[in-house]
Image 1 (cartoon, helix red, strand yellow):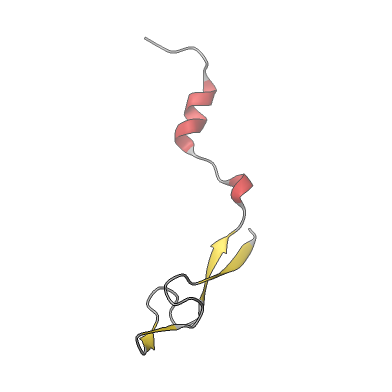
Image 2: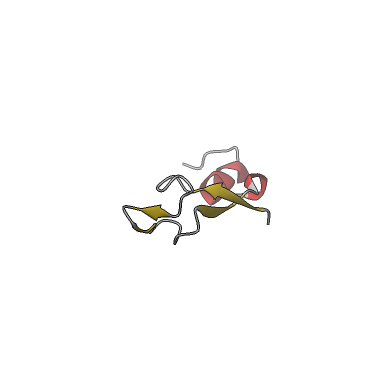
Length: 56
């Protein structure tokens, strides 16, 4: 898995909001996101691809 650091949108990377530690990023100023979008599988769409024939 490829993890990227993304600037926290709540505190804009400062790590603090209103004089307190930012609750969204725990005061780090960034959040870690998984940048492996190619391997994300939506199980619902996967099931639809199993058969082209609708079963009635």
